[in-house]
Length: 268
Image (cartoon, rainbow, N blue to C red; front, side, top):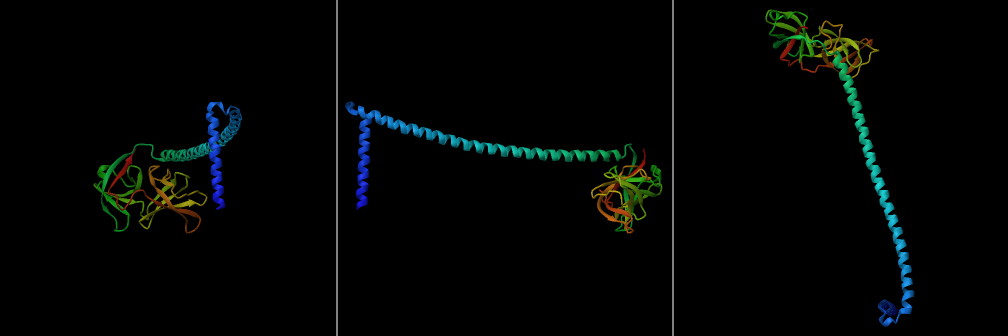
C-alpha cells in the first residue's frame, strides 16, 4: 500500500515538472522570462557536459577501432612476410635443383652418337634378367662390347655375342656384368654389378666416399662404355661383407624385364 502511494507521488511530481518545463519553454505571454534564462543556463551546462563526455567516448571508440585496424594490418603484414619467406625457400630449392641439373648435364654424353635401333626378340632364363637377343647383328655394324641403351640415355647392357642378323646383349643385372660408374652428386666412384640376375649394386665404393639415397649413378670415364650414360638411382646403402667398402642398391629407371626396343651405340 505504501509502495503504491509512493509511486503515484513520483508520477505526479514528474508530471508537474514536465508541465512546468513545457510552460517555461513555450513562455506564454512572456510570463516565464525571468525563469527561462537560468533554466537554459542549467540545460546548457548539462548539454556541454554531455557533449564533452560524448567526445571522450567517441575518442575512446576511435582508439579501439584504430588498435583493431593496426592489429589487422600487422596480421596481414605477417602473412605477407610468411609468403615471401616461403617464396624464398622455393627459389632456393629451384636454384639447388638447377645446379644439380647443370652438373648432371655436364656428365651426360656431349657428343651425338650413332645409334642402331633394334627389337628384343628373345630373353634369357625365365625369371632372370640376364640377357636378351635383338634382331640386329654384324650386318648392321654391331660388334661385341658395344653399349646398349634405351631412351638414348639409359644404359641397360652390352653386346657380348654377334651373329649376322642378331646379337645377344648381356644386361647390367647379369652377375658377370661390371661397369665403372660414379655418382653425379658426390662423385663417389665404384663398380656397378648385377645381383642375382635381377638387381643392381654399386660396389667397391670407398668408406670415405659420400653416398646418399637418391643419388644418380652414371657411367664413368674409367669404363669401356661412353661416359655419362645414366644407370639408375641409389635407394639403399650398406656395407660390403668385408666392411672395407660401401655398397649401394641401384634402381634402374626402366624395367629391364620388359624392354622391347633398344639402341646399340655404334660410335660418335
